[in-house]
Amino acid sequence: PSLAQATGANQPIVLPWSGTNYLWLPAVASNTATTPTKTVTGNFTLTIDLALNDYTPAADVTLCSKLSSNDGFDVLWLTTDKIRLRIGDGVSVTNVDVVAASSFSDGTQHTATIVWEDGTGATFKYDGATSGSQVAAAKTLTNAAVSMTVGSATSVGKIYDLTVTNSSSTTYYKLNPASSAETSTNAATWTSSNGEVWTLNNTGATPAQIVG
Image 1: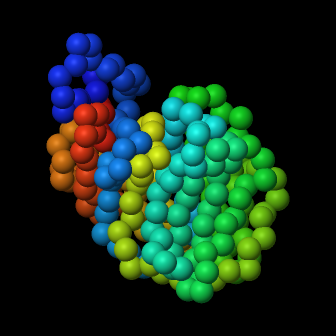
Image 2: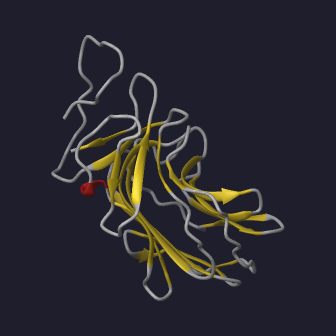
Image 3: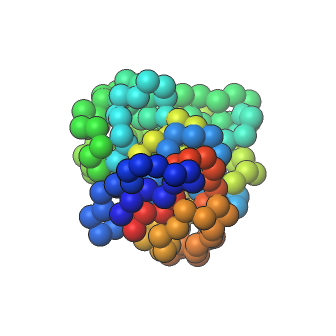
């Protein structure tokens, strides 16, 4: 498929497709996918299936966020090729970083998992393999009553899936572009396999879009 563009171009930008739809993010502000807030507290597991253009980016990449002031959480991919979980406890926000870099090759598809044990810390996995020991963080997650946002002004690449579940395997969020038709329409919506409604927000010459 070709990348839909809001302005004319001499040559189309061709994006690879292996048969699975994905969310394309252009690293431009206001290009995201969002879904309404749910209460997330206690233990949770976040898994993201992604292919970043650059795993050692020039600036830290915000992959997803449900953070407001000192409440909630978000996930970043750092310039050092590491994952960071930020946890808000209502008083402050604490950085919880994986110890080892991923060593992923730029543009390749991989899965990163964060298992948060409330009040104790986080365990990180690359492609299903645990990376190092649990990183201690004696913080109690407080809910942020804001939408879950995937993508940011620094996010560039493909998101194939993002899932957040609790310790009882109840799914809070499930961003799976496979549930959507291909679209580059601003404010287009689709319903995930978990039932929540996601909205595509985009702007600019090469806007965020579902590629399929």
